[in-house]
Length: 554
Image 1 (spheres, rainbow, N blue to C red):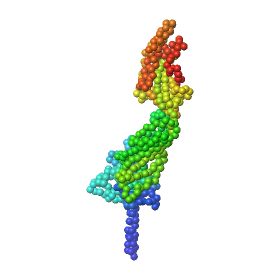
Image 2: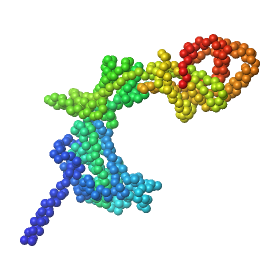
Image 3: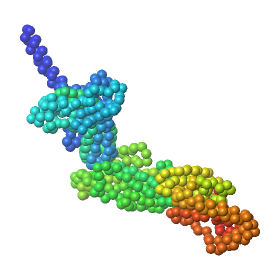
Image 4: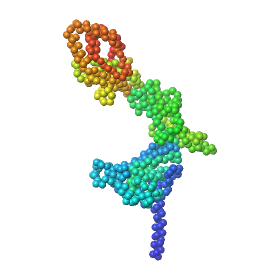
């Protein structure tokens, strides 16, 4: 009877062993709900998660298990999972996993984990430079010998490692009821072709194990959502000169807007495809069709307009059976924003599929400052000479709406090193013409770069010029000339009149225009003679139109 009980106990134990060894990959890796539909198309190179998992070699820890705290020396390891989703069906999607070690730890060139030099953490410096010296472990266990493949040099499903493994982390990827195993260091990538991947959002889960003697223990788990779609992922950037803030989708009338279409195709799946862009700007200008991803368009009216773009590309696709109708469009997948995904695939007789992408936006067109120009620069005579300071008046005109603010940035001749920034409000009462004078001070002689901007709520117009300030020799001549005029009395009046007549005859105003530089020469003497003429001949007026409408000085 005793032998019979022992025999029955042995049978029970033998019957239990297969049950313990029958844990499957989906039991270990999957976070899917019970009853989840597990029928998926086969991903090339991946295996079914119905395969058995070697729990003895790769232990399984649930979330909250106390053993996680001791899975790594010095703290916890984090795994970061990213992908280049969304992916157009038929293209390749790549997943990348990067391990983040505790503070002061890093991976060296040999794959060992070491402490960083001159880095201090809460535990203080360690006498051992290694966190994990796997090179020494490999030598001790002879795992580097290709002729001696131990039973521990296998993946969780029992498949052997490649010969001479020099990687100490095992990554197990899991999605759509299938898994992929890979050895790696602190970062790995895995790519899959999406031809057989179910459309829509999916979940990729990754579990990372580290070498622990002749076994492996889990150190991190991570998951992320990726999207496979049969609609071309389309993004559009919009930019415009003088536009103060393009991100608010408000633009200026009478200035071209540049629309640049960006197709998310990181694996260059559409490189050989003919792509067409069909634009409708919503301003009754018709439909524009182009094979260029960049297009300029100018709105000539204020208001709100609906922009619509359709992108069409021909890509390789499955050949439909002659007896089958073209498949119906898949359900729409609508993300946040103004770019709903309308999924559509229409097979043709050449075993290719037309894919479409859509972009929609509502933009607002307003008045703005279209252009700014410096048309004149004059020197300013100071009542008390300042040896290290020069004042200049810049006469500025603009087109479009009137500015509310003027700003100047004075810098070195290369326009790189800023020396002075000044902003002033602009009087709202400018009349019918945008004309104002901006007065700025320059410290010392030399060449300066000056950027001048006029702005309002919607626009910001810029112009730049180089300004040359002469040396103080001219100022010395001015003071000497002033003393001479005061001492000779009536003779000074005569000389002034003759000089002014000759100056008016031979010297005219010259607009700056688009010149690259402005040189102010003899500014002190010119201003002095001009004021002298006004004092002695108050009835005589300049005929230049700019001075008849002399603006206020800012």
